[in-house]
Length: 192
Image 1: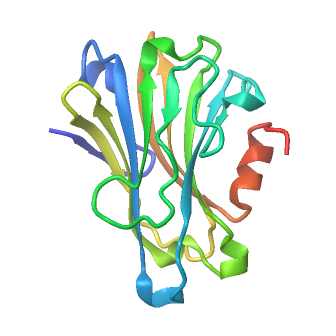
Image 2: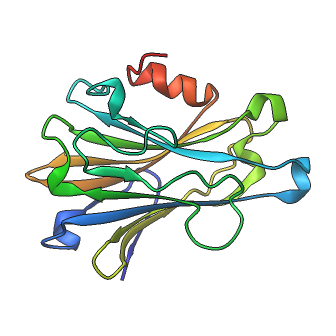
């Protein structure tokens, strides 16, 4: 049975799924149709950080226009422009053994494309979640459902995958920001 995490909660993936080699990270959300009437385009992005808290290189910023990390261990499955339908809206596949050794942490963010122009924020989005699955058999290991009302935020750090004691852990973060994707790029040292 999957572990349901609260904000700030942590889980050792290595302990929950011994021998885990490949994970699937699913991110999901639903736009509240009554709020703006406009289409929402949410985008998942990842930042592969070194011990200094900055991207190892600009190529370690993974998003819909740079889908694969230099090491080949992290692959974004593409941009869902509408978020329509059930299940995961965007998916990232990670081969844990292939992630470059200098990558200490992977940050999972979701931002609203053109949020300012469209007067959109995460308060107009519901059912936001991140879940970690074992690619072998698609068994869900952990899930974090964001339950706050992010009424002014246009960007959310959903969670982070990080190395600890020769294994991988996941932390549910749920931190909202107002600077969109550019803010995350500046925070994590991506050239913009």
